[in-house]
Length: 188
Image (cartoon, rainbow, N blue to C red):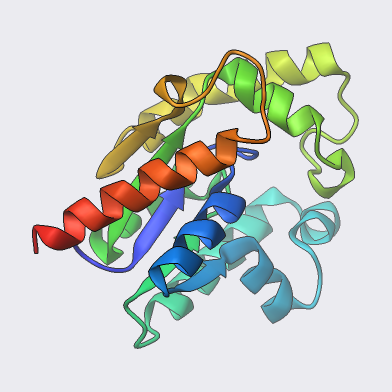
């Protein structure tokens, strides 16, 4: 397994929450790429997208990932933005930079999880009704799944969670991610 680890998946998949939990358990560093982008650029990703547009954001997001990948830290888990792997050659870059792991949820779970968050932090969905959100997630995932599936590994959450959202979902997925990383490290 090549380090570092890049968690990918749709917005609301828990990349930040789950990644942080697992990094802490492993004693590794954790970097939320959206938070790093915000720190570097002096504004949230949502504000940046609203101000400069999604294309400018994606270009600067890529520059941020490239600069962070040059750091000498290996034992780190990065949580990417949901759309990052789907822009230009970003997925190819992630496959070369380290090990990518896709946190795969059903479209229904993703929409339900997103509905419980502060949508104002997510410009692409902030004005959507619950029904519109479900349709939007389904539509976007129809184009993004092909990128996400290229990850080195996939954690399919369907086997780990129930039909309804639970507070224990992230813990179950974090446990599976931790086990996968431990298994991969033992094979080195």
